[in-house]
Length: 152
Image (cartoon, rainbow, N blue to C red):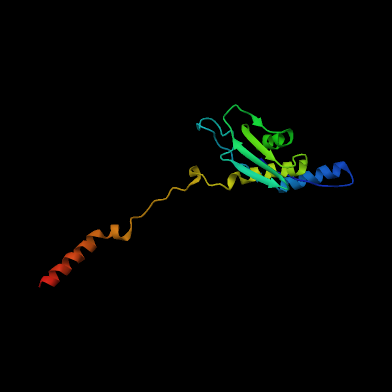
């Protein structure tokens, strides 16, 4: 999923909403979804535990089993629903009454989901043998030739 966050102040409400929507479209970040337990069906939760901080608010998102739902307060629950996450536990500390910081901390935590490299994202590589392994026959023959030269 994807989620964007925009804040705008204006003299008129409609102008502020329009400006906030424009800023949110410019700040869209991808949200990586993963599994808890088995990997059947579509991804439903976040892949790992992630933390976001804004001001004094620290928001921690924890993967949850399928069917748990979003265990969060009303404001971050909306952000997580927009991000496409259907099962997640949350833990928030700090002054969560400041809704701006609460939402920004959730947004920053969601933006960190792609920053963690898990084994399923590793690129398959074909390893070459070491030069010693690759040229063992040649090296073995040189060692034998040296003995012959020393004996003569």
